[in-house]
Length: 102
Image 1: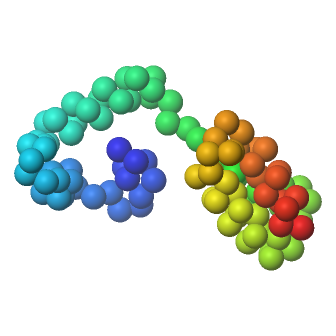
Image 2: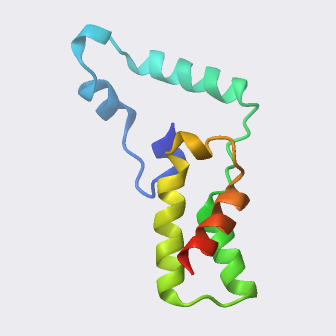
């Protein structure tokens, strides 16, 4: 489902089924059924504001040097996967990344 949302060229569902190990016995129908279940659980709300969006917005308001934007982007990506920053909002991660990058 993430590839359908993020990618420009969406892989065909048959590719996923073919790549799955035979032990899982995945079918096209089971993938589609699971996608429907996930969408219903999420109430079709797939939006996510990443820290990169907030870094870009900050740059539009207060232009940042390129090296600060690059460092902040790297830091924010590192923070997202860190358990220490798990419960911080994307805007706070972006703000902290920019502060550290300067």
